[in-house]
Length: 270
Image (cartoon, rainbow, N blue to C red; front, top):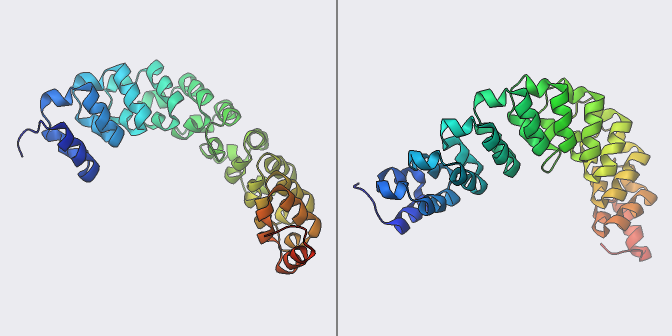
């Protein structure tokens, strides 16, 4: 195939076939800021085919990264090793840290700054820093992103550290998913988690999912958490009514016998 100069055709092909078509794009198009940005919005890997000047342009690459985090992988080596630039990229999208230079991901001061902007960036720090208690504590206290992901980037040892895990679940109950088995059976830790996010009950030990006080706290936070309670507690009228009060749809998780009795009494509707 010869040199392609038709922008619309190229953009359509990126949608249908991927970015490889850009290797045949005219040189002036690969240096065209507006065109390459449109291509990046379709697929961040389009930056790989941009001119060297664009891949080294701080303002342009940052704009590209905002559209698709993978774009940073194709930025110039200088930008991927630029502390200030990568920090700004991480602030916009924590996933970009994976494309930073190896040196930056192993730089304690830099990573500490990065996780303070978005805790989930911890996942892409060096192995040594994911085992650094101060770095991990900073990440879980920030805990950027949903589902408690910051703790998931920590070393196995720190996911078994009670103080670290407690800090994480107090910020985001879903962090319990990444805690050690022992801490998922720790009543105080689990109670803190379900008070923050009732759905965190699903990650608690079987024993605690049968603990009336823990389950009551969970369903008061989120009625749907009832589905993770023990069979016995899903047949407990007081627990079920607390869940229904929080979320009427929670009744579907009650025991069949109790659900029928509640509906017959006209207390609520399924």
